[in-house]
Length: 371
Image 1 (tube, rainbow, N blue to C red):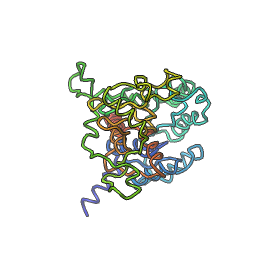
Image 2 (image 1 turned 135 degrees about the vertical axis):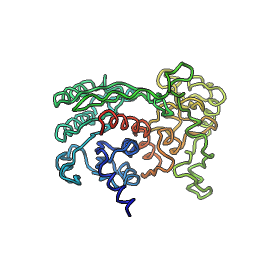
Image 3 (image 1 turned 120 degrees about the horizontal axis):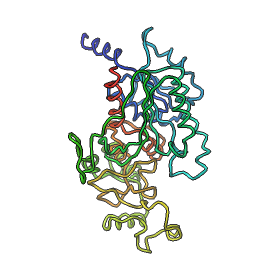
């Protein structure tokens, strides 16, 4: 009993955080691993919210559009003691309108303005620190929103620092560039230094080689097909570790890629899609395979579909499983995913902030602000 009381007291004394745009919980998972007590999370997507609740049961989840949530009312209901303050406001606003994968009409995506909801919460709650993550395109396609956010935070008295980081340089087994903004009321939070480096180059003292796909997923057994699971012909050893059934032509494309290591534009004429022959430009990674001994390409919402990017397994002519994609996003093998089906889970995984990177950011905030 004494040990339990001490653990509960330590939890109450831990630095506090609120996770905006929480998704399936990648950011929260990393912050908790860093030592934060996450008080609340806001997420409007029902499937993502169910995944979040399955893994973070002690966090209050607000399943509403963030524009309908009052920051002050929210925080007043969360206070466990009269003098409690908020140490960190963190969030990963929707980025679809700012990514290069969208067409020009993405500039008019109504979700783009959700970036400014972060400013509204900072204005009313005045946390000691703020942390925001997004795609680098926010600096270009969304520059008016990002500038308004930075100007607003500085007007509130925050010292703002931001940079575009390669997450492979922080031990994530994936090439994933992300814009990170850190802000503090007292002092300045510097971007944490890289922990890993390209093994082909000389790294700084203490840095380790990039984490590879083999290190992340090489231990998993060969997965069954989705049809075999639905037909009760195979037993699923790890939840969501099954592969999509693919058409014979798709399998032949992946077999060719495994043997030749080329992108889809090098496919022989008999394996090319007509649309690819008519338009040789575009995204060449589709129907490609990832490499065992390098970080993977960026995991997106299409990560279990070979036609959506370079998501072919490095040793078998099949696409990645959702569980493999989750491991490349540094979710633990035990992480529970809920959703209407594989497509929903893939979207949740692709939209998440890698847990390992969130943990590094969280630890840096605690260390620099002495929380």
